[in-house]
Length: 234
Ligand SMILES: *[C@@H]1O[C@H](CO)[C@@H](O)[C@H](O)[C@H]1NC(C)=O
Ligand SMILES: *[C@@H]1O[C@H](CO)[C@@H](O)[C@H](O)[C@H]1NC(C)=O
Ligand SMILES: *[C@@H]1O[C@H](CO)[C@@H](O)[C@H](O)[C@H]1NC(C)=O
Ligand SMILES: *[C@@H]1O[C@H](CO)[C@@H](O)[C@H](O)[C@H]1NC(C)=O
Ligand SMILES: *[C@@H]1O[C@H](CO)[C@@H](O)[C@H](O)[C@H]1NC(C)=O
Ligand SMILES: *[C@@H]1O[C@H](CO)[C@@H](O)[C@H](O)[C@H]1NC(C)=O
Ligand SMILES: *[C@@H]1O[C@H](CO)[C@@H](O)[C@H](O)[C@H]1NC(C)=O
Image (tube, rainbow, N blue to C red; front, side):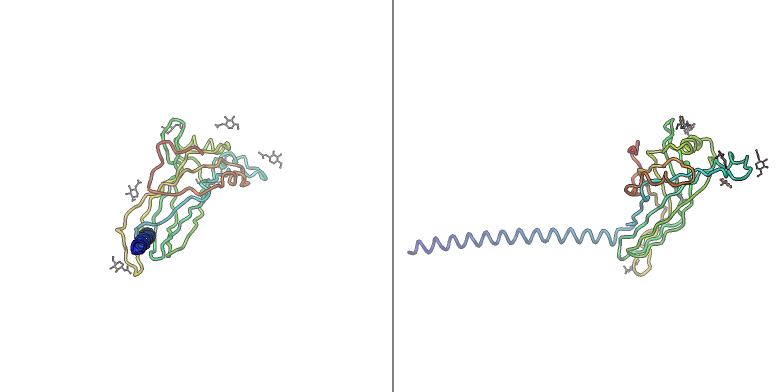
């Protein structure tokens, strides 16, 4: 009888031990989840420069300027050297706490030319970006220009001819300021570089926008990582 009681005791004890172990495991798992969530929240709220930038559609659209045909424009050939470049920069502040200012931005569109040199063949001054907590802004950029330096000519010739340039990227250099809830700067004011890639420069079509739609896929993210030596093909 007593031996039987002992047996019951023993099984009960081991059952409890099992339950304890299970409870401990669950508690540990919950703890890990909490730590992970807290770490993530901490990262989002306090890591300076959580500015999220990307190039919409991962592409730059190019249009040729139609040499106006209607009138006696024997001059059309010179004006049609111009190309119109358009792209959009998407800027987002995912944080609920901080304000982000990215100002004084200069954007360079770069690609490798046929002799393997990388050239910046389009330079743009961008409007300042000011982001309230959890807000996003799209900046639409448009520039009409002709090739001005000899090294630009290869790119312009290809684009005018309707050829797209893959393996391109955009470099942004601007002043990044992160402000906390009470309006204090959380970071020293520094010039911050972003590399957006891969970018496809969609070869020029005359006037209509058929060149701008083909490559609309996902946005090209802008990070602090320069493109790997040979950016991925388009
Ligand atoms: C200009 O327009 C005329 C008719 O309006 C057309 O015959 C001619 O091909 C056009 N030229 C070009 C270069 O588009
Ligand atoms: C082009 O236009 C300019 C004025 O806009 C004129 O002086 C020049 O002679 C024209 N060139 C040709 C080839 O027609
Ligand atoms: C490529 O770029 C380099 C550097 O700017 C330039 O010297 C070279 O002529 C370019 N190649 C061509 C084919 O345009
Ligand atoms: C071509 O671009 C230049 C600036 O690079 C501008 O002065 C000129 O007016 C443009 N021509 C046309 C026809 O858009
Ligand atoms: C322009 O395109 C044509 C065919 O589309 C091609 O034969 C020609 O080589 C191209 N020219 C340049 C400079 O890319
Ligand atoms: C970015 O801009 C700053 C300020 O004009 C300049 O000092 C710095 O050299 C630039 N960096 C690059 C990589 O162009
Ligand atoms: C904002 O930053 C300033 C300076 O770093 C600090 O003194 C202040 O307590 C911060 N305020 C908040 C709400 O985090």
